[in-house]
Image (cartoon, rainbow, N blue to C red):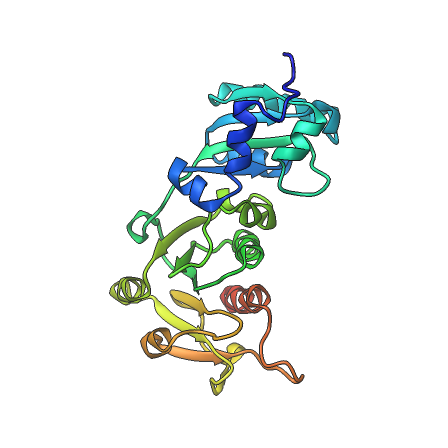
Length: 265
């Protein structure tokens, strides 16, 4: 396979254009960069459309086996040289793996819930890195789903996938407007736990053993009044410092693992 060496190649121009969200939305695709992320995507059953590889950048020669797996999943495999891969990559020190997948958009009704569900709702989270970190926590804690309400970033953002280490492909996700999400949770008798510094109840003082949805908002504004009024209970994480809030991904991890702790036999 002769590698692509020209930055003006139409395929390369197309991939570079997909760094822009509007272009990704128009094309209905997402980019997944990195061996670990791609391996998780394939293991989840996702099928890449195209796979761009640069073997000289591979960290481990044994990783080349993934090329055959991607091809078997239906991907067109395109070899590129190091200069071209540096152009299409969105991270520093790339490892020579980048794939294009069809983007999937899931609704609340697509979610499959366990008998005692644990969900996380993030309202208006702006930073892709935070959303990706929340996905990693969701995967580690085994939550049912992560719901993004009134989002400012998209699941297909390459930095969401990067920060999640591929957990986007292991955790159920959905998008919804806040009113619909609140009604959907109430219909299923899932208790909404609103995280807010103004709450009087500490997070480890609430009973979180039943079906719950942890709701978190932006770091600057927190949850909207709609969520605070729609919640069954409000909780706060104790803080002794001068800063009035934690990073939203950190706060989510603390809240989720309190649920996990309480549910331990």
